[in-house]
Length: 312
Picture 1: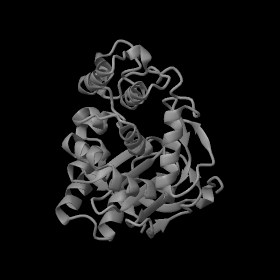
Picture 2: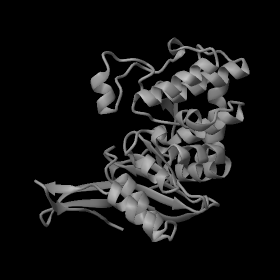
Picture 3: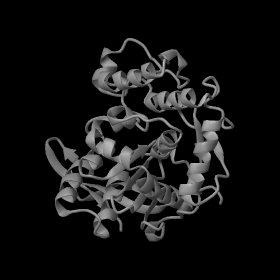
Picture 4: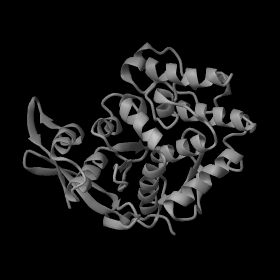
């Protein structure tokens, strides 16, 4: 597989204001059935992209297969991109404490909380406030359980990362030929957009405990009001990723993956929602609720002057 070029992206959505097209979103999108067969696609879905945090559910599945028997909110935080609220950080601390670990063992970078209220109350950056600290706490706990080195858990050759590589290849149905480093410092495996959709579909078959925990505590996956939390509230596993990546899986094991060309997430949840609707995979009431939540509002003062229109 080769890397993406600008010409590989398809026009997915148009934002209007006052009867004039104002902004355009190009990207990649694909819906696969439970067998990984393509039901609909837009753009070159077979070229390499970075899934970013949309692959966290697969990583959490590997940790569980390696013996990390978390439950409830702690299980959700192991695959979350949290915004550093007190509630999120308390759960991360519980994971660490349960395995005689401390915040100093975390190797993710320091950051301020992403939640505005939490940010206003924070005096300094910390590793535990970084949005991937739950995943890193899970990494550390898994290493502790298996007797693996906790100082080198971010090395691509570490036993844990090798298992994550193997699981990614298994679920995506393709070999990983490019490995980089994610924003949190963890190895980042490139897949195709099609491979990512197949991976989240496969995850839905193997990660039922993770999915049920996320549905029970949708706020924990990111923050209340986030797109993935909103999909979870309607019964769909969903996960955002940096640079405009969004994935959804259904209880019927269909998988959706979206990648927006310029890295802006604004249109991605709407694209995923419309693919589900078009193929009869979402009830009308859930579609109506999510449409109101995830479609951007276009205001002029206090009046609605435009909308996001999908191009498929």
